[in-house]
Length: 182
Image 1 (cartoon, one colour):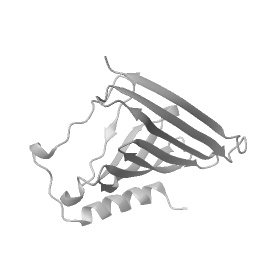
Image 2 (tube, one colour; image 1 turned 180 degrees about the vertical axis):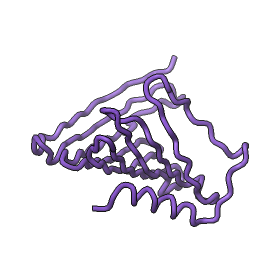
Image 3 (cartoon, rainbow, N blue to C red; image 1 turned 60 degrees about the horizontal axis):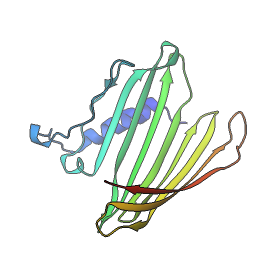
């Protein structure tokens, strides 16, 4: 099995292999502030080719883990397809805890957003703890002509495969939501 350290070094080397230019102050996107009162977060900047900045993001970080260790995370997210109001985004990440050594966790998923609804599928595999799979969706059934009233249907699925407790029974949920803006 490939080490998380090797994956991290390869991702840094691949992103640095592209010719890149650091963005100017006008190109920097605003992010939500990090709440440092709970945990200290160390961010690792990863250079990405300028022409890829708007389509994909490579992220990584080191945070304090449980039991006095550290947890390293490396991942990527980006838009895979976008056309006429339909958009598919993908994401993937790998994380590992060191000192004490914990299991490696690898996961990813796809998110679809369209004019009348959305759907997402996610999977997360943790060594010796199995794989968790989830899917959820939302569809707009009715929207008033002025856009203030809407009726939406939602649904979801979750299941754990393998791990110390074996495969769980599937968990389904469905619902209807009516909203009106006054």
